[in-house]
Structures are given as C-alpha cells and as structure tokens.
Length: 326
Image (tube, rainbow, N blue to C red; front, side, top):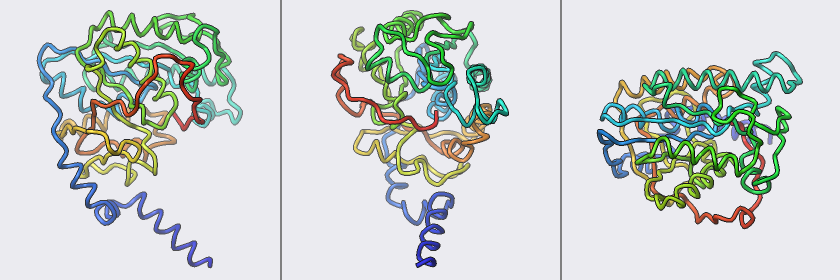
C-alpha cells in the first residue's frame, strides 16, 4: 500500500507544480479561459477604485487592470481595508519571534503597508490616490456580523481601534459603523465609475466581508452596476499550477464557476510589471511565493456578478468559516 500512497502523493505534486499538468488535466479549462469575452476597454476620464482586503490582493487581482486603465487615461485609486497584521507565520518570520506578540503584529502591518505603497508605485498609482483604513486583519466578518456598534478586539494586535497614524481615521474603534463611514468617505472623494472588489464566492472571510460592505455602500448610492468582482482564494489549490507561469492563462476559480467572467489579456510588459508589483510584497513571498506568483498569467478575470444575493441586514448573514492566510 505504501507504493500506492507514494504514487498518489507524486501525482499531487505533479498536478500542483507542473505546467504540463495544466495542459494534461485542464485542456478544456484552458480553452474556456481563452474563449471568455473580453473586458470592456477602460476609457480616458474614468475613475477606478480597487478595493483590497489586505496588502497584496490589489496586485494579485488587479495589477493588469490598473496598468491598462492608467494607459487609457483613467485615474486609479486603491483602498486597503486591513493592513495585513494578522498573519501569524509571517509575523513570526518578520519579527524573528516564534511567539509573536502585539508589537510584532503591528510591525508586520507597517511593513505590509510600506510594501503596498511600493507595489502601487510600480503600477503607477499616485500616493494621493491610496487609502489605508487599518481595520483588523481576520476581523472584517466580525465587524459585519456582530460588531456593528460594539468595538471588536483583534486576536493578533489586541487592539480595538485603528492603531496606524497613516490610516484614514487613526484611533477609530473597530466597528462596522466606522468602517462604513470610512468607505463612504473614500467613495465621496473618489466618485468611482468602476469599483473592483472581491467576489462573495471568494473563500476568505475578509474578502467576503469586503464584498458585503462595498455592495451595501454602492447600493445606498444606486450604483451596484459599477461593481466588478474578482477571486483570489478560489479553492482546490487555485490557481494551478503553482509558481510563475507567464505563458499560461489564469483559469476560472472553482468557487466561481458558473459566473459570467470576462478576461483582460495582458501584454508582455504588463505581465512583467505585474510580477514586479507582486514581488514588492516581499514579506508575503517568504511564505506564499508559489501561490502569489501563480496569479502572474496572461490574463486577469473580472465578473459583473457578485456570486450570491447579499442581505443588507448583517444579522441575517451566516457566520464565517476560519480564515485562510491573508
């Protein structure tokens, strides 16, 4: 039986890591990805807002869109919901502390915001077009579900309010109402024509909560049709194969099958610049390099469909599942 398990493990390694595996196991998926309708071109004068739950999501999902929009003469803005200060393994590595404490987590948040600024710079987004909100990594779903008005305490930093001076509202208690208020302030400043956000079918609770907050905010404005959705945490080792595979298309995530996806085909220069932006998130690459670089493909995918109906009443929504790495 050991040979059988060994063979199965070897097959798993092949499927996850080998480019040949995608051609062998996913030929139909490859053809479907290349046959998806093209994304409508970005236009001069448009104002695009990229909403990122954590520093790095903006580069994984929208680095190509950011470049293409700027090339077309649009303005691109970015807002980060959290500062990524709840990744325990990363905090341990960065702080060289097997048992990271609150100072290690806050230092990680500062590090990741600095990396996000560098990634945005590489993509051409002006510092004045960047907003950090500083809400709790791993806690956004709690702000939506149980902490609309009562402050939430981060299990990582032990903070119950925004600790970062460079955030939009430093010192704001961690509540859904305050996050709503900050998002409204960003939307008022940007007045976006398009808002690029995670899908409700993304498997990370922070990503789903981000979708809920933005859908509600845009619904209040009667502008739900301006939302475009993407997926990073898509299930089943998505995306496959792991590692940098710039000659391959990004496939539809298993969790997002059935949605009407549109593709943005990237030029060689756009792919190279996306790779630079992803690599700017150095702290994340130390532990998630093959996952992150797997998003540097020939295309990016967006859909107009959120993935599921969203109740605007937080109490009507189900509890979240445990959070994967941010």
